Length: 201
Image (cartoon, rainbow, N blue to C red):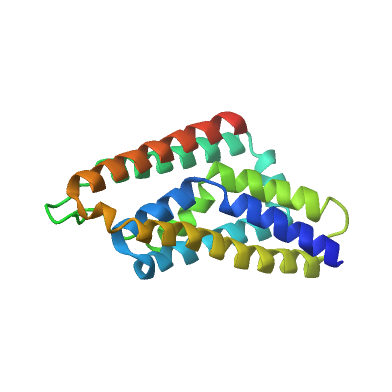
């Protein structure tokens, strides 16, 4: 049993800490607004993914696959939403003191939506259920334990990216540096979204 949970924790860490739309947005939020104001996004993204993982364990993925084009609709609509966010990040206006003028800190709901509409989150949740829960008789205790473990690891992983963003704030006090940073992160977010869309097609 301990070996199983160690494997679960390792899987959760690798998939949560790796670059993805949610982590990139957490970095941007940390850099622009600080860690405290990024917590709603972190909590929303963590809760959103765990909810997706739990529902996948209950058979949501199988239901969606019965809907003609269901997965494709989710994938394309989610990618469109994330590409819109990448545009907002890249072209946010920077004032002369280095602060963002029109880019509000992401909310809990936006964080949750980023996961629900994130192709990477769907790939990870489906893979996690297939690897650790399987297709046999569902053990709710194991599913709940996996979800709890993922919540802890996911929150810490996204927080790491947000903290990394806050460490960049001193450099970003220069408006030109801040503008280039947001453009870079917006471009990186768009690249990750397109790449994830391609591999999930």
